[in-house]
Image (cartoon, rainbow, N blue to C red; front, side):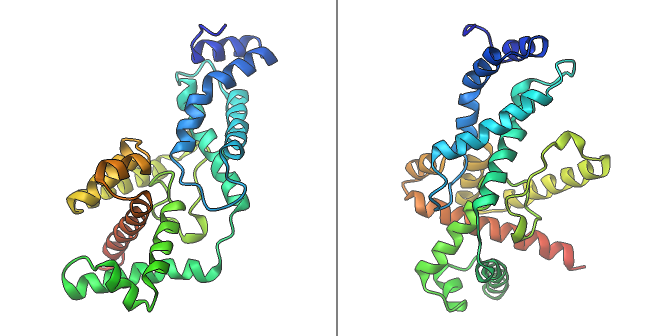
Amino acid sequence: MSNKTLQELVEAFCINPCEGLRNSIISKSMPLVRSIIGKINRPDHPLTHREDLESAAIKGLIQALNNYDCTKNVQFNTFSYYRIRGSIIDYLRSIDYLPKQQRKSYGEVQEVILQLSQKFGREPSDDEVAREMKMDLKDYHFLLSNVQQRNALSLDNFYGDDNSLYETKENPDSESPIDQLERNEIVQELKKKIGQLRERDRLILTLYYFEDMTMSEIALLLELSEARISQLIGKILIQLKSRILTEVVVP
């Protein structure tokens, strides 16, 4: 049984949905589960140990297995990816509490970075943004790390508000043609804006979101601390959102 591929095990389960096959599928899927979890910068919370996230992920995996249709031309690992990720996100949202003041601060950082960029004709430094917000630099860096944590999975929620930073579509296949068109337009606009970033910022986003490198791996490559990489990703995300939303609202 262990010599069978994941897809072969799933197809056998479709014919004979027994507990033994299900356990084999779960075991075979753990590399995928751990890969998804590895992309998440866990919030500082006592209930976000690896075992907690694996338990949430396996729930999503089992749901995917129960809903999988072997007659459709979709590989199980592709089909289950979004269910596993969605289950982890739901779990994180269930234990997450973000104070209202901190949500407000996200919007303020976005506005201040935009204003200072227009004023200086360049990207403002962390010191300049923190000073404008009357924040201690340490508190500003903490805020940036929180932005990164709540956008750690992907850029899918780029236009969502701060109350839905863990939101994800459980089944992207259910999107209407209009939804798909809008999503494609967003992706194209994001690619355009990412291409306009400074080389280092562009490299960090590419490595993290598209090359599936962890923050610790990126930190080692760029000879920076993991905490600094987290702060930089948070700042880059805020800057991207500021630029795109500005183009949307300004004629």
